[in-house]
Length: 343
Image (tube, rainbow, N blue to C red; front, side, top):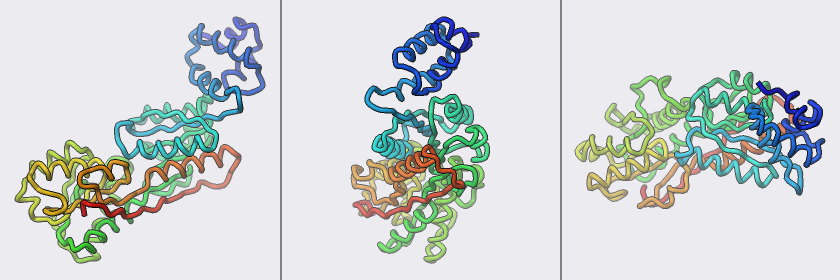
């Protein structure tokens, strides 16, 4: 196994110099740092490769640079991608480099991302969604700068940016009722199922709770048939609408889909059944992604501001990197109702 001492001997420098280079310290000349990095690579010192990448980013010729990570759940889904886009723009505006990676909400991948803070690949990390508790994440990070985004509850261990899921869904139902719709189908959750079985940190159960509270407050009918509990996938939403058929869908005059992918699949499924939105049935989504504007018809949305979530997370992380030692903070990004053509 190659050690720092081995690299130091091969590169003709001290062990401390090797350590400083691999941790991205600025007190080593560019020429020496490059020699150490090339030596480490040649010796296949794998444990240091991540730190070398961070070091090279920090050593931009014009100015000192810092590196933060963004561990997103799924690069193929528009919601986390929109959060990451906002975070990347904010990081650049504040003079930081950002590296994106995907976790698939798997503990092993999340653990690897968090541990990159400790080996100095990242100065700090933003984690989108998580399968672990905040206390566990803070322990893994060794109390180094970490921000969790799109969690469902305030956390006492780490900084958290919260999504306004429950109030957003509540106001989505209120909006539809205000437009005269009385029989509303909620796609994406059901009160008959165990909320603990829902993935993505109970976001689904929070949106369901908001929709249920609004239906009850307004006195709108909502029996078991008024909820479709399906996984949040566009293909499954389309298949389910087709499977339920036009007779079932005709019982409703509006649909609230609880996330962006469901909205896309529901709209296509309605079209498959020969139904037009909004003349036959209205459709409203919960998202805030760019595609909402470009669907046909454009999608009326509970805009949960994913871009703003990313901006806020970066600002929180930078404050920690600049020495803020205050207790863990929580920010809830407010939602906005975006009326468009579909409802």
